[in-house]
Length: 115
Image (cartoon, rainbow, N blue to C red; front, side, top):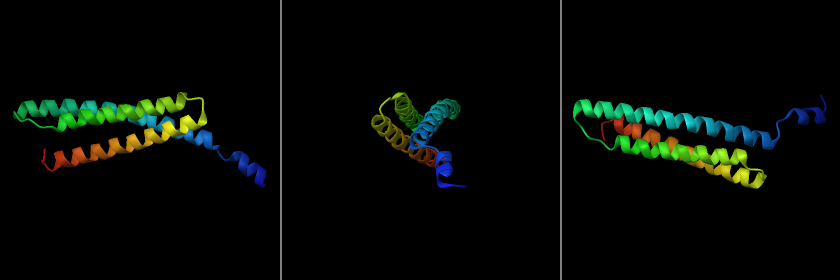
């Protein structure tokens, strides 16, 4: 196997970035749906138990964070300029990680009945 053929088989940086943006886009869109489902479940449980919590409000904010990540990754996919696409993809990645972190915190607070 020579050096030229192994380099030809490697994915280009542009295709790797595009693949990452596509994954962020689809996963963040799915997590928006998860957040909305959890909000609905919270509302049902809170109504049955006659309690009030800020957990559903926090999940609504988290859904908006994931929506922001989804929009940034969509813009990265649609961008023609490589520099802009990379910047948007990095922003989408950071926002996505913030959303995941927030989701974990809310789940922990609910699990330990702190909120």
